[in-house]
Image 1 (cartoon, rainbow, N blue to C red):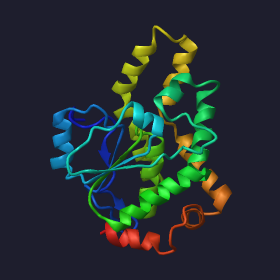
Image 2 (cartoon, one colour; image 1 turned 30 degrees about the vertical axis):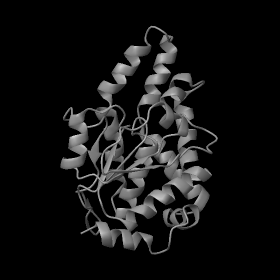
Image 3 (tube, one colour; image 1 turned 30 degrees about the horizontal axis):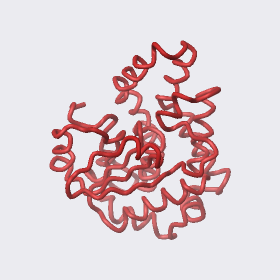
Image 4 (cartoon, rainbow, N blue to C red; image 1 turned 180 degrees about the vertical axis):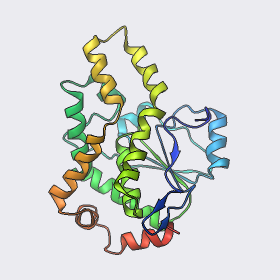
Length: 248
């Protein structure tokens, strides 16, 4: 991965799906775009032709570490886990996390399906995608959980297979390897070995996290289409309209 790209950056398009190919150079995902270099700004503006950025972090995260402003790029903040009963997605919460990080992550993924803020935030995000087909970047802190679920939704709606969705999801562990090592090294002098191990778990993704979100969708709404309609309030025609616009 080029150093000018944000951490955990990738284009999730350009892959074959059930009815064609998902459009490339439209849907970019990454970790936070905070204090990025001028070269990275230029990459996002010119190489990606970026027009919109969606920030899924909390208000506190945004206030502490606001995104670098990019000329002619529109920023939208959607606090996905604002009303969540479980949240181990931010850096502060990972560091301060108590108990089993793996179980906390599973609970967080349930909340990304059922909490009001997540449902409203993802509905807003997906609805915007139909209203404007300009290139977008969506991110959170690490670009792995709130962002990972958003990417999974886009890919599922487009007609990608479960394996394709999981492959993209798990790329995070490779693309964040160096950034995660730097975080672990930073805390080595102030955290116990056990706490460092829990932090390392929290900094990575696992297949069972995304599977827990999928299981919660079916448990709470009966089917993925019902989740889109009843959970997110999207129109019945949303999937067909999305595929018409973005799958060729």
